[in-house]
Image 1 (cartoon, rainbow, N blue to C red):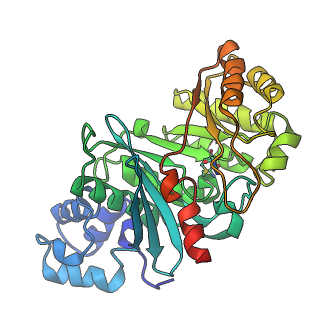
Image 2: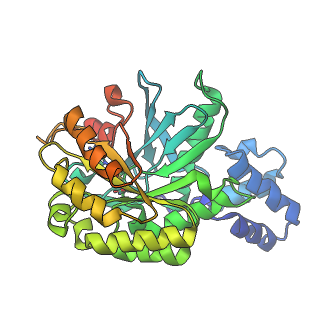
Length: 352
Ligand code: SAH
């Protein structure tokens, strides 16, 4: 890794301190924060209202960008998939999913992942390293710039939501994720409502505990994967070290603290997690709790015989849950024709 830290690793208040320490007036800090976050400057030269000496000094101590676009693909359904190369050559994926009245940005928090989920392409190479908060944020800035440069035809505005559903386990990199959340939600940062941000986790107990304590107000999705500890361990070996009961309990506690309903994500795999018996047990576990369910039919991988479920099995599974009074939605992943779903772009490139 480059020896210079990324300037955007600093949250806005730290940028204020940096500028004050340099003996500059506070409006310079406002200008710098604006360039870094609101405007998402990618070159020092863009910061035209900052004195050249200030820019030179900053550039001698910090890097401004840590990502470059290695690949950009647009799917038939409008999904845009990006492969970003980091300063050390590692790559991560991010996705823009156009929705009716906003776009959803799906971003990564780690290079690779240590969770070893059987159905997940990212799991295959193991964990390489954590992303720095600046590397997390810069994905958002690059996606935002792409959206502004080329607004999708039917999109209502430039509004976007952020989901931490790309590569990696966000709660295994909580410190950097938390810093990125501060900058996303601060008025001098990206000024986003925490309502527009969603963290998806495989639910390690320690990470969930930290989230409950920090209560950042963002939405929470728990990727469960099994209705008993054995089932969960079979498809999600590392997250399976946290019991189903504890993962749900902590998720409910978070939902109560954050005063917003949380989501349980359930990957449907044919002949495995699409079993209606699991649906019944799941319904029992979730009944009466501030949780809804997203069913995600598995996106097939190229090196595994795990298959997506049949449509009738998806509907049967859903019916069991809705009959129990649990709000349940089926989520299909976009961009299959460009391997946009779930970490497969990076993999294909590594293999070729
Ligand atoms: N580690 C976090 C975030 C990344 S995975 C988590 O587990 O939530 C984001 C979501 O994608 C999870 O719900 C996961 O279950 C789902 N997912 C991963 N691989 C998939 C695949 N091949 N098909 C469908 N969904 C998948």
